[in-house]
Image (cartoon, rainbow, N blue to C red; front, side, top):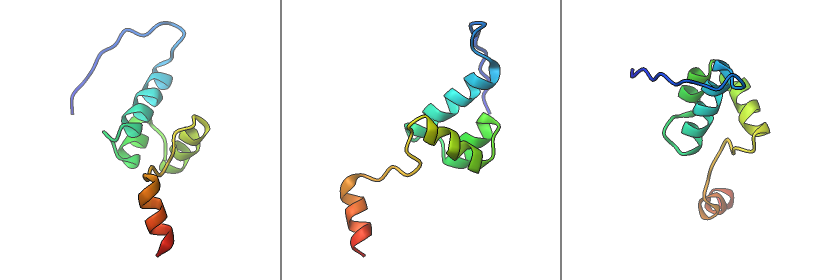
Length: 72
């Protein structure tokens, strides 16, 4: 694993920065849900609740794929 050091403004806590990084990496598909939750320091269930409140979809199906799945 690679280590990254960042100087954060006082207004952003270490925990908040980890959460925001994990959310963004999950959102763009760089981390799985489980790995993003672990990076943020939360259980999967709690991470799902948090990203839902942030407007990040837990399941990101393109509309066409979702239509196909629902038709089965």
